[in-house]
Length: 261
Image (cartoon, rainbow, N blue to C red; front, side):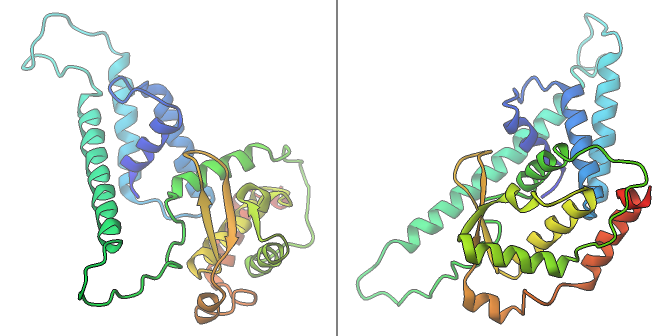
């Protein structure tokens, strides 16, 4: 998912008019998401930074006085026009992809007499399901906003690792069957522990140990246990986590965790 997907996410979330984008607001929201992606140590591609620069350029253009009576050759028109065209084209592309996916699903539901047997469909290969990464980031933003203010010289002697957090998440799901996505962060004391929990969720999704579901657009996200067979085939989720994940969390702690104050 790229910068246009993020912009469309913000537009849908705040029910903005795509033909009359409040550029100052959307630039601020976009920058907040990119900043959060960096804090979570998610790789931010160069195209995200290009879009950020584009938004700032459009914002600065809109602050300049407009000249009346100039045509297309003498005036560039509304600085937002090119961006709106890109968003509309990308939106049509996404809708076409969804239409093809629905058609494929309909074709799978049609049984022809004498036809070849259908191959089984791996229903566990859902991962995030219909959720986008930006939907998860929206939920994480809410969690971060609820964190208590950072106290100077606050030090936490014990830090939970991503592997330990993965194990705790699985234990809770085995007991409760399902939990709210934001509930997985209720024990987080600072940004570092939010990052640990988030990376643990991503790794469990990757391993198919858990699955995420959202019934309504921008509604609450529920977390469920994945298929046990698939989890076992992908590795031991309770004891193993990529070492680079813990390194990423440590880097995040060094960048702004309370224990470095």
